[in-house]
Length: 192
Ligand code: 5GP
Image 1: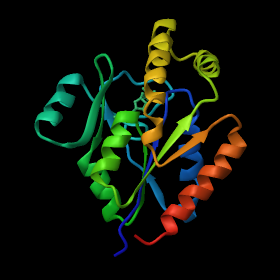
Image 2: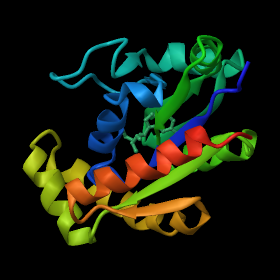
Image 3: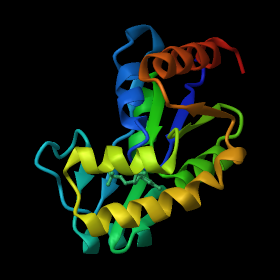
Image 4: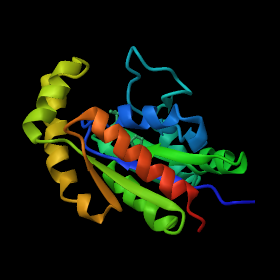
């Protein structure tokens, strides 16, 4: 059987990465399935457990770390753990799917390192830190302190962008959608 591909999307929060991931998931010809991560952060009102994330307690998260159930995990923000479950990725690959990840920069590079042959790591760059701040404020889901925390992290994450296979600058969403579609389709159709 043809081995499935792993498509990794990493970006500072607010760069439009999730929109691009959903856009690709809606294209049946790409045969993509979303890798649902586990997290210990609070669920937001618009999120569904088992669809956006597996929301679990910090204790249960730490238990899974001990049992070696993660491909990678990070304490992305203080006391907020996020991780990719081995079982999740294996199930999707066994179903014959290509797997798409929406994860932080370090996690993305970590997966790339473990699956160098069949993964494509895409970094979505916001046009500027100022624009990113505006977007996060417009979302109205985070407190000013949390926004400041995310901005500080974004500055740090942008330093890693060069290690990715491709960088997409999301200054125009329609253009970015077309570009990611073309790249991902080409990668999925290549034989490796
Ligand atoms: P949010 O709280 O906005 O959903 O996500 C915060 C950050 O954690 C985002 O950059 C998101 O991509 C990242 N993230 C989500 N799932 C995972 C994961 O499984 N592993 C890692 N390392 N980061 C993740």
